[in-house]
Length: 336
Image (cartoon, rainbow, N blue to C red; front, side, top):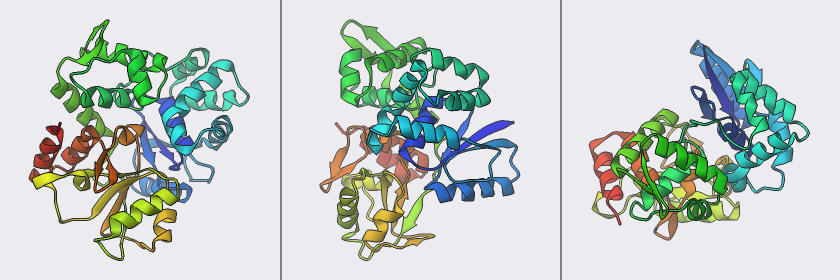
């Protein structure tokens, strides 16, 4: 029987998800705590052969509730901003576990429940050897390497670029080298074949998200001003926003049709309510949840608004699967 973990969309739950990093486990990020029960109910109705775990403070009707582990993680990460919880929360949890901080037994019990041998992380400083290099910190490293394929990065320089620990970056680079993706020297690390690394990243991305990816749709008052209104509202709420997918394309391949597509940090409803964009089944504004911090790395700028970097944009466009989106993906990839 497979294990599916449904998180409540919070930054703390995202940090717990990355810390667990359990191979073979499906992670689903809900829009908010109330949405957890909706997702669990839908999966129950589908009669899937799976064990459901919820990472939320609200009851969700799952087989296992990790609310106690989430409460402990909230205390441990209380001094971090939401975006820092997503970027560095897993590392802080690692250190707290290694130190045997109060509440560690709740996280230990959750990890042991999923994969008994994962409990050994409490005695170490990081993930087990062989962790997925296309998830969490690994994905951030791969994206950075693909954005600068002709620049050899030392571990220190790469860690500084993505705001992560040098130790964590070292583990990822060692795993990528073990899998044959990298040239490593005193000067730094370079991809052996950027296209192979890119395509394997996309394959992993396809396993993480679906084309619909739990998207939320809203109706703007005026399509021409929707982007500026949304960007201003996100800024007022202190949320990160990125133009995404077809909306992150410039030049001849850019599409004037279709909805405005964005990534938005956190639950979108509070932001949309302030600008009067009602939530509908289909609308001219579509919000994708941020399932990985790599989405936020090294943004491009389109119409004075941040857009996803070209690696994430490429992956998202390939996911759509149409001839037009594939053509746009290649155009974005080939941009300097």
